Length: 178
Image (cartoon, rainbow, N blue to C red; front, side, top):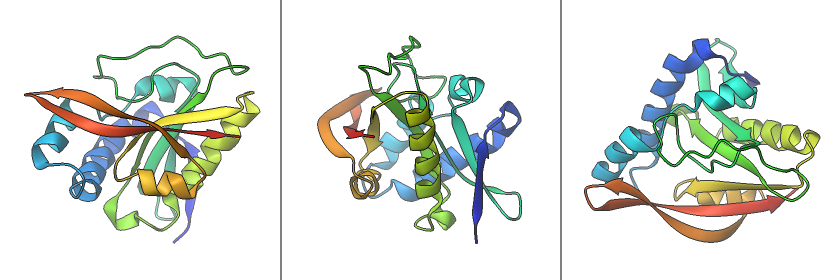
């Protein structure tokens, strides 16, 4: 089934929250423990309404109108995290010398490996390039690393995101020239 990528709106936020929770619980269980997943859902993963307000967050909508996945890009310094993430940096990036951020990609488990993430990523890369960026970077989850490698991204560094209770969420900062 085909999907149409469109800008996400504030009205989509409740559905996007559900997609994020279902995606994380359904697609990241091999790489992260149940406790890491739950703590990450509380403190890191979530909707970043700044991306929606900036017009850089997208929803992939099925022919039925249901949203199958979401993701975006940003011209702000924050590398990852939803509204609740304490490490936010909202300063704008300089496209001539800094990398735009690929952010908050989540696909429903039943839509995994059907091109949803690829369609959203292509839309984000094109929009960032149109905005003058020449490089992209992201904080990829361990489950996302193989997908992004296939799309031409390379690992730059491993990062341990603090979750509390003595746990961290290992992610990989990845980058790509566009």
